[in-house]
Amino acid sequence: MNSEQFDRFCAFFFHEADLGFDLDLSRIAFAPDFLPQMEPEIQRALTAMVALESGAIANPDEKRMVGHYWLRTPELAPQAGLREAIEQTQARVIAFAKEVHAGSVVPAKAALFRKLLVIGIGGSALGPRLVSEALGTARDKMQVLFFDNTDPDGFDKTLDAIGDGLSETLTVVISKSGATKETRNGMVEAKAAYERAGLAFGKHAVAVTGEGSQLDRYAVEEGFLARFPMWDWVGGRTSELSAVGLLPAALQGIDVRGMLEGARAMDAVTRRRESRRNPAAMLALAWFSATGGVGRKDMVILPYKDRLELFSRYLQQLVMESLGKWIDLDGNEVGQGIAVYGNKGSTDQHAYVQQLRDGLNNFFVTFIEVLRDRGEGRAEVFVEPDTTSGDYLSGFLQGTRKALWEQGRESLTITIERVDARSVGMLIALYERAVGLYARLINVNAYHQPGVEAGKKAAEAVLDVQAKVMAALRAAPGREMTLDEIAAGAGDADVETVFCILRHLSANPDRGVVRRVPDGASVVDAVYVVR
Image 1 (cartoon, rainbow, N blue to C red):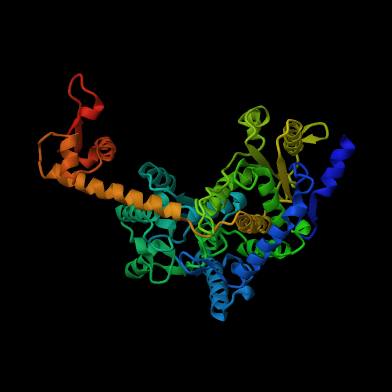
Image 2: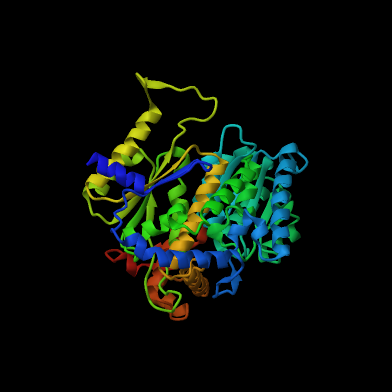
């Protein structure tokens, strides 16, 4: 049995020495004829990828090209102007970071920028945060913090962490349109904090946004220190190697050239037409086999490295926003997608591996292994004779993988030599390519997100109702009003929506809405008044 398993390991093991990268698919239960049957399909997907990189309109909804691969190989860009824009932006990012570090770009009332506040949402925060935590060290040029939601308590917590250091804090606001509410709210909150400290926001701010956008115009009006472009041919979830991710990383002191080089090297390998020698193609085929091509199983991401703890969250957006589609490219209703969740090893030994091994078999695992245990110059510690903490971490990974396979639970393993800028760039490129190829296998458009837009529109509708609710209350100052009366005064608004709005407003004293529940009545029979 051991010999048979090793033979299988050898048959489904990919090693790329120049990358320091391994992919083991031996614990994916491919049917005997699966790969030959899928070869025509993966070849069509690879052909579509060539067209994508050549500038084909890949997002027909918005008539856009999709060019995130050009970011690390600008010479592939189909127009000279695009190549020039990419190269110039990368050079500007690196030059600006050096100027900040050298004190050529300085805050209004401090000698040097020492902290960095990044304001963004979704891909404008997930990628930068992943890279920051994966590659950050005690030697970083700047301490990095994030506003990545529209949670007031979250804003306050981050501002408390900045404390008296706001005068030496540089804020980077990231939004393609400038109209994304979460990011705009974060910017307004940050500006208010600077003003409370007697500081001009614009003298401490940088924008990454679309040319001529709402944020771009605001940055000009407020005298921001610099503006960097977000292009409409780069989606948020694939924007980490644009100014979106490169600027925060460069300011932190991370080797952004190394990230770009790693992505470029992985791109070269994942362009191979021989599918068995293309790790992204094999990854996409493994997903198809494990899920039946219809999302039948979830993708569990288990990096056995603390620095990669956020990788599962990063992949949640990349995979689920790209693949979660109701309509396919032919207009058919398909309801596609792969759910992604994860933890880190060996924390997972004490969390949900019990269910993975003995519970519902509705998942496949991706183990991410890092061979180098410690950073350069760190002394090794032996916790037992000839055994280190890293040996235990490796043992837990191998033992968990074996235990799952013995119970009929599928997994694949990605192995890299170390966590550095180059390997992080490689992982980003690998998954971007695999998602694009898998999307073609299931015939969906990976590069639009109508569900996200629907959610934004629904949220805007709720806020429109809130404005009408407040108007109805203010039209009758001092008078207690029932839920039905307020809903009628708000234009016959949905009563449940009105209840949820009033429950939230009345819980925050500064809003001036007071709720009173009559004795013996239910909370839904409460009355409300504006004070």
